Amino acid sequence: MFEFQWPWLFILLFLPLLPLLLPQSFRRKVTPVERTLTCKTQASLKVPFLEEFIDPKQLQQKPSTSLLRKILLISAWCLFISALAKPVWIDGVANLPVSSRNIIVAVDLSGSMSERDFLLSGSKISRLAAIKKVARDFISKRGGDRVGLILFADHAYLQAPLTRDLTTVMTLLDEAEQGLAGDRTALGNAIALAVKKVQEKPKQEHVLVLMTDGTATVGMDVNEAIEFAKKVKLKIYTIGIGSNTTTKSTLAGRNKAISTSPDDATLKQIAQQTEGFYFKANNMQQLQSIYEKIDKLEPVIDLSQAWHPTKDIFYLPLSLALALVSLLFLSNLLHLYSIRFKEGQSHV
Image 1 (spheres, one colour):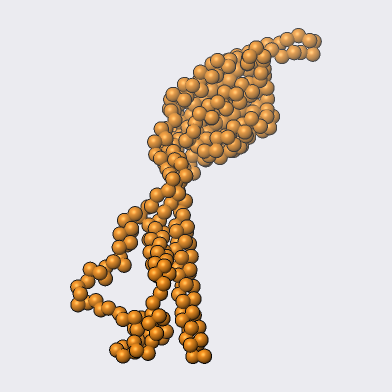
Image 2 (spheres, one colour; image 1 turned 90 degrees about the vertical axis):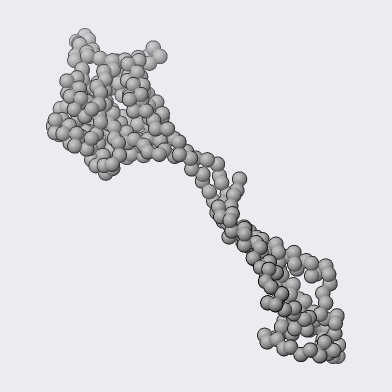
């Protein structure tokens, strides 16, 4: 649909009628002789007896031609005023968030994330695959929020900056592979990188969802990173991934139980000191319920502000008005040419 953004300008349609409202003393009728002489020359002469020397047929136009010119002139004026009223085409309705959160998802890519101790549809999958499945569903529901992605192991990397393009973030998460950033766990570096992104937008609310299955073994000291997070008011939700023990085949062909438990104490400390929460996920059901809880703790902001994308189309009535004026101008030229041609024929 379309509408006029300045409809009050249509009052200008009546502007040509203003002379009719003037008192009779201010109005003077122009004789046909004066009109003809004005068209032929820049200066008009008032000679009362000139009617005797001018053929009356030259002063008259065909009724149909005169009516057509009036219609063209009125139509051009209406189209010109329509262009001034700023017509726009409204292309549907888009909802924009009044405000939004910045949510950074940090995923551990250390060597232990390849352990297959999660079940999905009866099949064992790796911890990283389980995180991808559940985190992807979580990100897809954050419409209106800005979401970023950090991948960490020996070092922390910003894989996706804070953006509302959730499809791209999910694609980058799907492409993440274990060992991409090393085999160890730099928890402090992941938090410090998130703090750096928070400092770029200090007046907005930020949340970090940190997922790991190990203990900080490299990089910045975790306690120092926590202090940085507290200064910028970064709320951190920590998720410990994986069962407490897993089995590993030895050279003798025996299965040996080894501990792969995340550092629960450190993860709890990170969450508590940043006003977040710590969660433990040993299976897919627990991991899924954790993200559902985070969704409730950080609900998506209602998209209540409507935005109407508009496109200016004033050039359409303006182009038509100019076309009609050009046509009227050509018509007048042809009329004058015909008069002079007839005068030339009469002299001959």
